[in-house]
Amino acid sequence: MPTRTATAVWKGNLKEGSGTVKTETGALDGSYSFPSRFQEGTGTNPEELLGAAHAACFSMALSNMLAEAGHPPDSVSTTAKVHLDMKDGPNIDKIELVTEGKVPGIDAATFQEHADKAKEGCPLSKALKAVEITLDAKLI
Image (cartoon, rainbow, N blue to C red; front, side, top):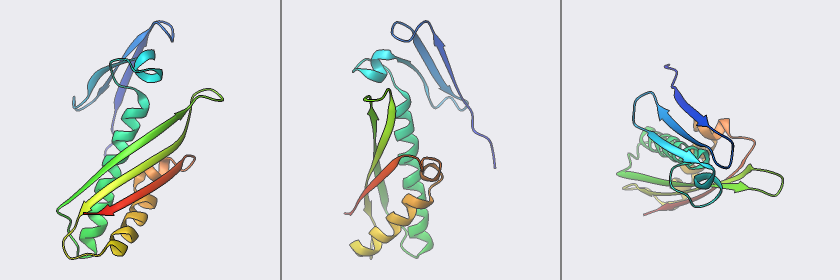
């Protein structure tokens, strides 16, 4: 399997500095800053990027599990809400996965069963075991 690479560069101190983040494929090439991370400033932030990666990983894992079980989905859409807690310094304490699947010929209970397995089995969920991960799965 390939190794994936991303690069981040930070210049200056924490509050007035700024940075750039870039993926090897060029799919992402953006800026980040203290305001974009801890306030509502322009640019991305590590938590947003983690959420995007987790949502993508989960959607792929769930789609694969459904297809392998004979229920190929028309679509799986996932949002990951990454919570940054500041009470003891910055800490990611929770990720909420909210997913909707359009899967012909399946009932809600079967969809939920596969979603639960995908939550446990996706590589990013496995890597993030130290964080509470919740799941709200809905068949549409």
